[in-house]
Amino acid sequence: MTDFSVELQCPQCGAPAELEETERLFDCPFCRVKSFLVGKSFFRYVLPDNAPKDADLIWIPYWRFRGMTFSFIDNDIRHRVADASIAAVQSSDIPRSLGLRSQTLKLRFLTNKENGQRIKPRLSLKEATDVFQSRHDAAKAAYQCHIGERVSLIYAPFYIDGTLFDGILNRALSGDPSRIAELTADRPTQEIRFVPTLCPACGWDLHGEAGTLALACRNCDTLWQAGGRELAPLPFSHIPSRDENAVYLPFWRIRADVSGILLNSYADLVRTANLPRAPQPEWEKTPFHFWSPAFKSAPQSYLRLGHNLTVSQPGESLSKKLPKGRRHPVTLPVSEAVESLKITLAALVRPRKNLASRLLDMHIRPKRALLVYIPFKEGHHELIHPQYKVAVNRNMLKLSKAL
Ligand SMILES: [Zn+2]
Ligand SMILES: [Zn+2]
Image (cartoon, rainbow, N blue to C red; front, side, top):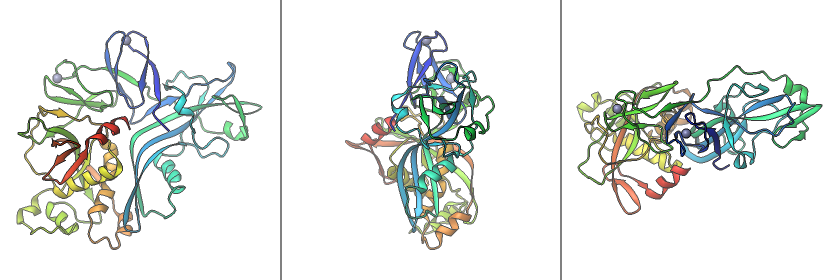
């Protein structure tokens, strides 16, 4: 699957417009009013139907997942880029995926005014992706996590006219219409909202790239994210740098309760990861944090960045202002970053003996998260942080914006 676009109407002037799937910031080319799209944790779309006018449409939900899957198999971490759509109901009467249709069709945001009946999703995203993944991996993973860069629910139209019809292609399907008619209908949903890009604290214009999840107010030094039906403050900090050309990459610093393994302090980390460092008494009191990139990247790079920062435990004093230099947009939400904590942990535990069974019993409960901008030095091809021994390919950053 590739990107698809979403047709919409400007909430201010009603002009028809089109957005890329990942865009959250809508800048109307006609009235120049900017709005930010706020919805539930994932967006819901409908595919256009071509059914006869009098057809009773049945909208069936499909999960659309694009992101990374990490598997712990044979004491090793494997990764893959996943890009799939999977029916969110278990039924052999309908196609299991949307196939290539969403590539060529334009989506609309779901409203409660659609004609026909909307079917309730029965499989969670995790259940759906697990089913999908098990068809791909020959070996059984002891543990698996999915980090979605893009997760949405897409409703495809069907109808019954003697037999079951695909409402996009208007083609009869071999599925059993009576079983489709028995699927459970869903209640009205929270519709997408357009909120003005004005700082809720001071009223100034907010700024951000089209795909960003965090809008910045340069007047009062605040960051804002979608929260429920409005904009909500996003707590952040940055590590100051004297380098005027530094590029600030966003990371999530996450404090979590971990069961089954002692990982409260930096000293615990040194023991868990068997780091070749002479223990210092104050390390027992230094809190341990997980780190994860807050931007999209290739799976290998994502894992390495999270690993190296988690092992390094950046401890510089933080500034609560926005950094003056260039900031890379926040494109990976903390709700997805927390999905990676167990695999980050798996990557650092030494030795790995019996780790597979311990991973299964372990519970990691995230408690607090802070967005931290970390200054990287600009090289020809890479952004580098020598102290944390990490480099990010600049092309990859550009590419993964479009990923
Ligand atoms: Zn407009
Ligand atoms: Zn402000």
